[in-house]
Amino acid sequence: MPSGADIRDAMAGAWRLFCGDPRGLERFDLSAEGFFRSFWVIVLVAPIYASSVLTERTLLLSQRFSSDDFSDGRFFLVRALTFIVDWFAFPLIMVVVTRRLQLGARYAAYITVRNWTALPSAALTSLPTIAYGLDLVPILVTTLATYVFLIVVLRFGWFIARSVLQTSAAIAAAIVALDLALSLLIGRIGDVLAGL
Image (cartoon, rainbow, N blue to C red):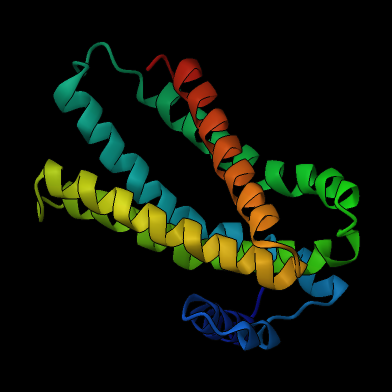
């Protein structure tokens, strides 16, 4: 489990990367131990994800389902499973991708940084949904802000891929697109399983 110092250093590095400074990579523990420890960040991301899921439930009940037709148990179970699958699927696929692209030597460093930066990325993309759930903003503002923040996060992911993997802009963009597409696919499968 990451220590407080690990979290502080990683967030400081993430902020520098977000600002376009590749020296932010120096704040991450890129050792083998740091690689495996970075997967524990899922515990830190989970509360943010849970807040979004609760807001999604509220939206579904207000717009598409009645409380009698909606299964809370099924919904929350499927969302929990898709969250876990999504967390581990991309790192597994990237084992193959980085080898094919001859970037295998930087695989562990990339996944380490990606795992850690998932925390601020999740916080940013969840802000509009959480704000809507608290009745702070209308649905139109929520939708627009979600797309804007998603673009910001995708650009952040692109910079991380390019900086850590030391690859071309096109390959970095393709890797980020793969990450997004995989998440969307897993999410869609989750929707089907949840009966949405």
